[in-house]
Length: 248
Image (cartoon, rainbow, N blue to C red; front, side, top):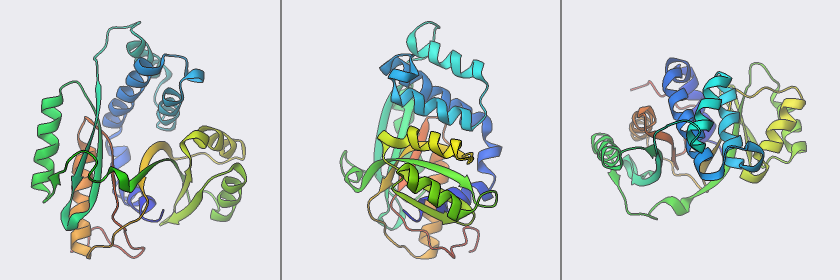
């Protein structure tokens, strides 16, 4: 799974998560609202809602914000009706890209995504063109400076995780979606607090591109992730251990 945590590590180093806290809250609130609308407001009976609330708590979102988003989803409070759309695309060098969105305006989001891809030397593909390259997985991150990789590795495998990697001080634990919550709970009970956790799409295999092309893909992913309607993006590029994002 190497490469996914490398991208997470780059984002942490660039300060993207802290600098965009308000935007992250907005994205999570959308996910909570949609999850509650589709599966009900009882998180015990709604795995998607539980996962969204776990992510909200990992980002230290206030409880009242979470409760309000749930009530908007169930109809107890008036709220916006969001539609989930996943776009499939190609980036520089033929990199496969999945773009998951929640939007209240399909035309606006489609136009924005197409525009960002065009400016980033990518293009929108047909449905099914790249999705077969990815699998849905649970992903959780732990601070490698705070915790021992060996300790996290042992606890994660004992709990039933699929894989554990360490990229630049970011320890990534991969799980099946069905066991995501139980493994996260086991990690917490073992004394490990995640820096973030989510259900995402990970590639089965990765492609290696030249350094500058890799930077172009990462810049495109960053632009896409920054859009308010985009929940997450996934790509099949491999990022070498010695890769320097800022080097020209």
